[in-house]
Image 1 (spheres, rainbow, N blue to C red):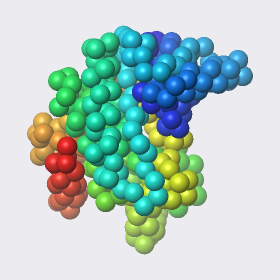
Image 2: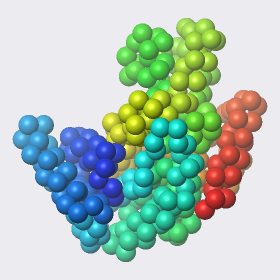
Image 3: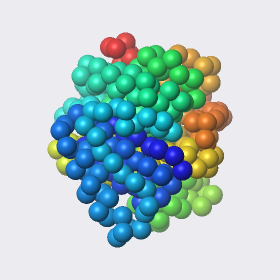
Image 4: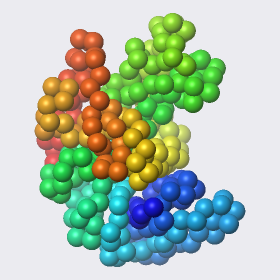
Amino acid sequence: MGKISIIGAGNVGASCAEYIAMKNFAAEVVLLDIKENFAEGKALDLMQTASLNGFDSRISGSTSDYSKTANSAVIVVTSGIPRKPGMTREELIGINAGIVKTVVQQCLEHSPEAIFVIVSNPMDTMTQLTKHISGLPRHRIIGMGGALDSARFRHYLSIALACPSSDVDAMVIGGHGDTTMIPLLRLAAYKGVPVSQLLSEEILEKVKADTMVGGATLTGMLGTSAWYAPGAAVSALVQSIVCDQKKMMACCVPLDGEYGESDICIGVPVILGRGGWERIVELSLTDDEKAEFQESARAVRSMNAAL
């Protein structure tokens, strides 16, 4: 059990801290924010739930004092402005790139061995930025988006199937964007049975469409980005790393020839363990799926050009 630091104590960051603490796999969780006393207040509020929720993790907060994050095993970066209704993730590049760059550089000074989990939007581009400015081995750089998109995909499939989402196995690869993600309908299954045998093509296409606009739908409803599901996705990802669970999840990672792509961070299935992402799982994609992935990669590269 080590230290997990979360940079940005807003809705997403606080949800990450809450879920991580409640799973009780981290000895210490540090929340850090630039807003005076904000992270401290969130940490105090969360600590007052410890006896009620039965966790022993220590949660502390700090205002911009990166020394508090020293020797973190994992650093989660949620900093930046969230989406507003009508905004795309891409529109956040200019503002959030400067914020993420500063955060990563400051964190590395105190935790040079940390694994970085990037949540800030646009996530693929911020993960790419982290790779370039950090100089870290690529297995220590992970973008969260695919884990979240896959959870949303499983949710919409569970509605269509009228079954628990825990009975559904489904994955989203590609970019973490409304037009770049690729829900793999062909490989989705309900307790081992392909969903294509259980649902009509029309229903499957609706599930795919709902998944792809899952974030935008919530932004329109809430007036800002979602936070419960992103926080849960981060906690599941971080738990697999810290506890060396070797779980397979879709994550945004730097590719070096895998799936025919290089010098790009994009969502693919990986095995997550104590070393970060420990290997990339190369799926046997159809020609159409390969074409979709290539198009997604082109779109992500186009966003990266704005850095």
